[in-house]
Length: 253
Image (cartoon, rainbow, N blue to C red; front, side):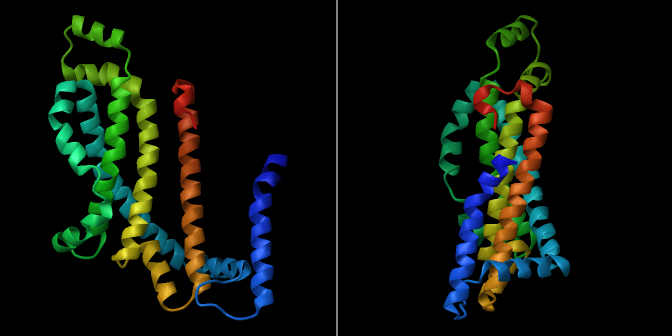
């Protein structure tokens, strides 16, 4: 309980100071709103279902893109980690494409898919590939060499080595990669909605800003943070419950 009170002391003090300062100023603002007004706007948006509908749209895009991009990154990471020759062969291609910001693909994706879920899922998928690929490749490369030597002596084919040795050993680290990729997917989904796509939480926040409703705009911003925090806590619980004792110290949250 003491730790919880210490954790919320500073945020609570800042919110109180902001409330007092804005109420004392007295003038309305098109950009800011008192914390109490933001809380009331958040409650209203949740009560009428608008916030929940927008959340469902954003999560659908994030999870769809994560499933596609994360799957591609996982398979590529397994291949590159298990077959170093393949990693060297594709190194220039991967390192040439990986630095491209996902949002830079918006004009191309608009031409190919138009507005809607397909646009957002495609961009999220591109962003989700790289954390899964890099971390999965590193996890596979960290597999005990003695186990791989035994597999070679037994002349196990590549598929059998991956299924029986590599994946079970690397799975805890791969879940860490999934956690990171999920965070990236959510961030990119909201960014695409703010920039161009008329769906989800990002679009709701943009519309509130354009119609001069700062309390609603900040309510969307707060909810995005709360949603990301809760989802990360959920994944952390799964990670600690299922993989906690298998993770090396450096990979533990």
